[in-house]
Length: 167
Image (cartoon, rainbow, N blue to C red):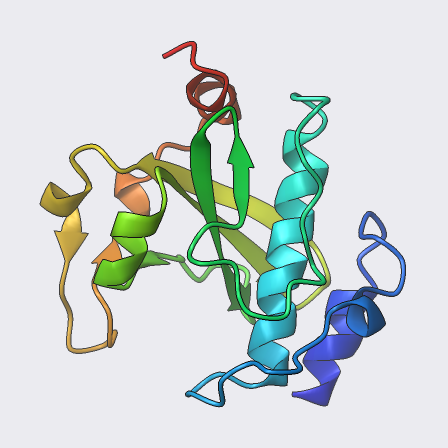
C-alpha cells in the first residue's frame, strides 16, 4: 500500500502537502486504514480541481476535518455532495458507485471519482438522491449496495447545472 501513497501524492493538480495536511487523529479503526482515508481525500481534491473550473466560488475541501464530515464532503447553495473514490489498478476496470444506506440520507448528490495507478484521476459520473433507491443493486461481490456505472450521469455540465440549481 505504500506504493499507492506515492502515486496519490504525485498528482500534479493537488494541493501541496496533502499527506501531512490530512490528519487521521481520532478516526475510527473500522475496516479503513490510512491509505483508504488518503485515497478519499485525493478524490475530494480531484473533484474540487475539476468542479472549481466550472464554479469559481465552489468551496475548497476541508481536509483538516478530524471527526469526519458527517456524510457530506461539500455543500454548495444548500446542495450536499458526497464524493466516493475508487482506486483503479487496471485502466479497463469498470468502477461502480458503492453506497452504504446511511450515505443516502446524508447527501443530495453522489459523485464517483477514480484514481488510477498511473496517477491520473477521472470523473466517473454522478447520481442524485431522488430516485436513487430504484437504481441500487446488490451483489455477493460488494459488501454494500451499489449503483452500476451505466446508471451514472457522465455529464459534468449536468452536474454543474444541478449543483447551481439550474435543473
